[in-house]
Image (cartoon, rainbow, N blue to C red; front, side):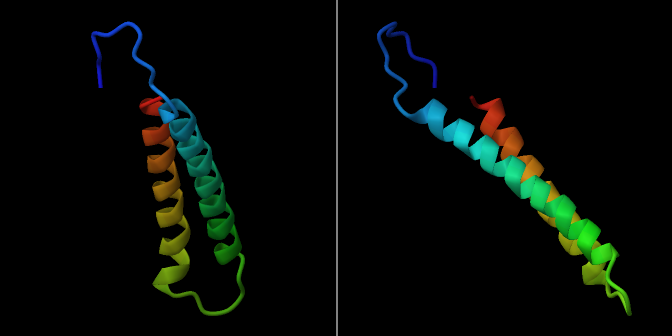
Length: 71
C-alpha cells in the first residue's frame, strides 16, 4: 500500500514476504524431489504418481512468486 508519509515505517512486512519467498523455494524443491522419487518407484503407477509432485511444484512456485514480487 502506497503512503504519502515519508516517515511511514513498513514494519515487519519485508521480512515476512522474504520468508514467504524462501518457504516457496523450499516447497518448490520438495515438489521436484517428490516428482523424481515417484517416477523412480517400481511397479504399477497410478495417475497420482504423475500429478502429486508437479502440483506441489506449482504451489511452491506460486508461493515464491507472491513472496518475492510483493517484496
